[in-house]
Length: 331
Image 1 (cartoon, one colour):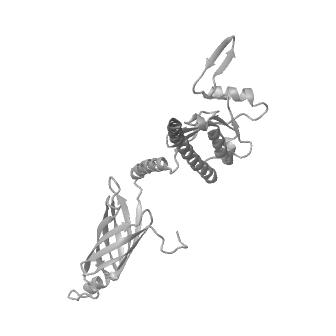
Image 2 (image 1 turned 120 degrees about the vertical axis):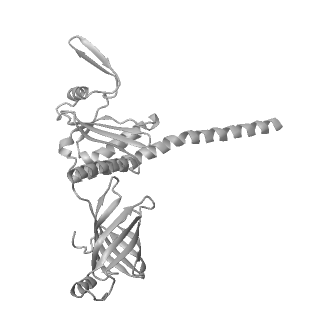
Image 3 (image 1 turned 180 degrees about the horizontal axis):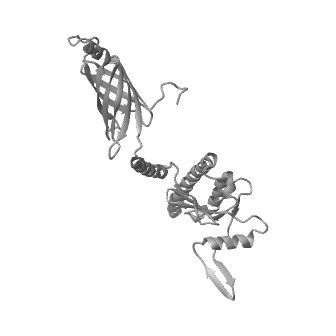
């Protein structure tokens, strides 16, 4: 009786161990399928945006042939192929997508008494040959599509079967992290071309410091330097000093993306009085006022915290509007 209880306990422990092992082994497949599913959702959104913006024309893509849709986990293959078709179909429209199940299988061709057996990646001319053989009376395929799962997402590639031109290619992950990195590279390329053309990159700022001191001004600066971290331009002051004009220079830093700079502003009322009367006193403000400025952006928004200190003894805290239109109905 005691032996039976011990055997039962051992079997129970073995059963729990096998159950835990099956759960642990099953987790990577579920995690991978969840990642691939989210990445395919992002891919569908990207394709729909490209079609809406005119970057991709459904008429130029369809009929398209799905050459490859391979999951990293063979257990998810059926689900993955269905999900890929569901991803592509909205952008291509009804009847715009056909699947080539023979494209990734071993292929045998007989020509002039010679038989060729081929495996592995398929060439464009082979895709055309298979499409001609099996499509029947339908229109020839225009584009070949590969959408394969990779670590952390999916890779998509659209190739024109007539010219071999790459129509669309992108690696997509659930959070579009790689897309953001690619966008930064393109931004750098665009910036180099902008400098080569000599085009300016203008930034506008509206500063409103209200407590305890006041400072209100408008700035238009040009962004320059090897890393675009310098901002230099003109400033119009509406308070501290009142009705002034001058120059401003700021430097962008890596700390919270804040900018540190200074404005040197000439008071227009005082300047007019000095011109009319060499011995005239300052009317409202000294002839020249220097204002130190620190701006701290709020995330990626066009607003930021503002800290100012001027030679007039004014210290203020407020808000800075960066490249924001002050009149909403105007661009």
